Length: 309
Image (cartoon, rainbow, N blue to C red; front, side, top):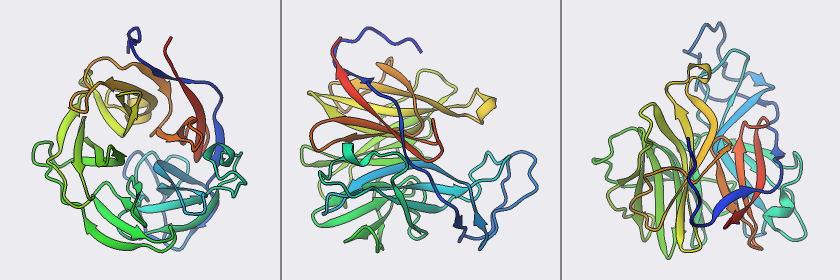
């Protein structure tokens, strides 16, 4: 993709990736699953312990003690598996306790520690975390919602009522952010990105399409909405249906910019290598972006700045 000359701030990496979370050996607790893609002769067996685990779409949130947590898709992995078989569990990684409590100090090499995985409420499918009043929320690709007072004990709170009639039924990978007192949820809608808004996380507007890639072989993955300096930035990961070498999944990600939330179409303003990127603004105003399963297994984080040049 050709990146045009910039006319507004754009993200630029200023460091290297730091590998913060390396999934540890654990027991697979879901029903036995068999990969369906490729020639495989194994299954993921319920009750079996697996050394290797993979991560995918994830989300970050800070608790009341200024300690950071990460939740996301996880599955055991055996060589030869390139499918989603075995997904459905949600990993929970706890960041280190630091004197400052800042995200910058918490991104230490392989310092995030596995906590018990969550199997309820469908939050093993691309969860988005957000705190509303005194309650933590995890919202899944199926729009199921889990709530917690402590980020450890979770209760199912029903499904978000979002009208998807104008975008089709293939929706996934939600991200919810609070912008000017309104909750904004972006999601993948087949090959597009849609947006719905709410004032209370209960009543939502009809989801409408705000972006579609120009390449017909491209689908969107893992959208993430960021307001900055009077503009809005849409980060997204590529799923290239024309690339058989990786079954469509890619480490190529892009950023779109718009002056409004209605339309992000047009050329990307930045391209970079990351999978399912998530953006974190540190307590002191520093900016970071995470990536899953690239360039290391698990979760890695890189610092970036906004450049005007």
